[in-house]
Amino acid sequence: MFNNVTFFKGESFPLEMHKVRIVQKLSLIPVEERLRAIREAGFNTFLLKNRDVFLDMLTDSGVNAMSDRQLAAMMTADDSYAGSMSFDRLKTTASDIFNKEYVLPVHQGRAAENILAEAYVKPGNVVPMNYHFTTTKAHIGLRRGKVVELYNDSALRLQSEEPFKGNMDISRLEKLLAKEKGNIPFVRVEAGTNLIGGQPWSLSNLKETGKLCRAANIPLVLDASLLADNLYFIKTREDNEKDKSIREIIKSISDEIDIIYFSARKLGCARGGLILTNDPKVNEVLMGLVPLYEGFLTYGGMSVREIEAIAVGLEETLDFDMIRHGPEFINFMARELVNRGVPVVTPAGGLGCHLDAKRFLPQIPAEEFIAGALGAAVFIAGGVRGMERGTLSEERNEDGSEHICDVEMLRLALPRRVFTMSQVKYTVDRLQWLYENRDIVGGLKWIYEPKVLRFFNGRLNSVTDWPEKLAKKFRSDFGDSL
Ligand code: F0G
Image 1 (cartoon, helix red, strand yellow):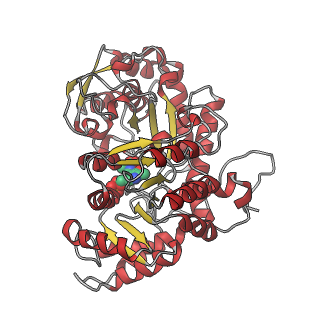
Image 2 (tube, rainbow, N blue to C red):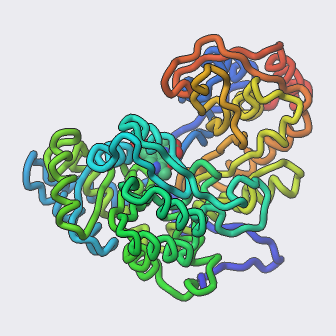
């Protein structure tokens, strides 16, 4: 049904349905150099220099592999401030795929969030959503609105069998819509829910959400940045949808949604963003803000080359071979780690493989940044750069105390079509080694803590000399090996 390839001897692993035609040389520096690099970066993986990184699993944002067709399209871009035919092409493609008439350009996902919040969020408003994303929450908070998350109990359970942890809790939504009547500018659903481990919602759950919003006459907004992964999970995990094409599933999703926006750094594998709607009034309001914040309506802060690449990238997202690659590699990586006893988020979601840092490093107190310490240790162990998704990524409480996160994860993103199977296997190997040596790893403490979005530029130190001990153990276990 999904054109699966099975193997003669019963092995099971995903197979790439593309070949590599342009490559970038990587280097893996020795463990002593990795130790120096992470110290210099203040134990913050955002501050590592890319030349010191072997496998960059920080994010999938803007770093998905592009196809030959995307690169070719970039060469034919129509460069003009107004009336670019490149934007016309993107508009036609996006409008056709998402079944929405109006298409507005923005320079990236958070720019769409800025415009939506500016247009609709007033002080004291409440914006219900399945889960927040950092930039979404910041833009709503800036307008003194409040995000209310209506996830199910299973959402924060890191190990579960629940296939749709990103689902909206329908009964909580129903109650909130009644309670906050007149105070809700829109409801937001996020595809491939990023901060809970790239977890999807089901189409049936979206339909129930849509029904409630229509009855309450409140617009439903979709953050489609991680839609590709969510589409894969709908097709493979939701019985009613498995015989539908990706195009049909997108159409069913779009039928429920009033405004779609996304980061084309993720969806479409280029760099940019779009906002789409069928409502002429909504279009008029948003259209007024695009030239103010982004640029003229035929580029919106994007380069015309990227605009061409997004158009082709969106078409390619309709190809199941393309959208299956990420989730199937992530699933493979998670499965191999589970088989070795390494704690990961299950079921595996999209975007990346998420390590369960609290179970990985139970000896570290929450105030010493468990997931942040794991990120530093993973870099020392293998030159692999992940992203902390835990207490470090939170803002402090109003009284100045640390806001301890319920969930401490290290995200190892697999940008689409970038890493090979052997690179994934290498990562699994180094993670297994680290897990077996986890007792060596200790916590982190601040040496410089910025007030806003501290995780980007903050610097930390190790609470003891555990990084040196870890590097020494690596050298004694691996000898001359990198
Ligand atoms: N929405 C979601 C669900 C995202 O994951 C992101 C970005 C944005 C909005 C903002 O888009 O970066 O183009 O402005 N996520 C990146 C990440 C940063 O690494 O997960 P943007």
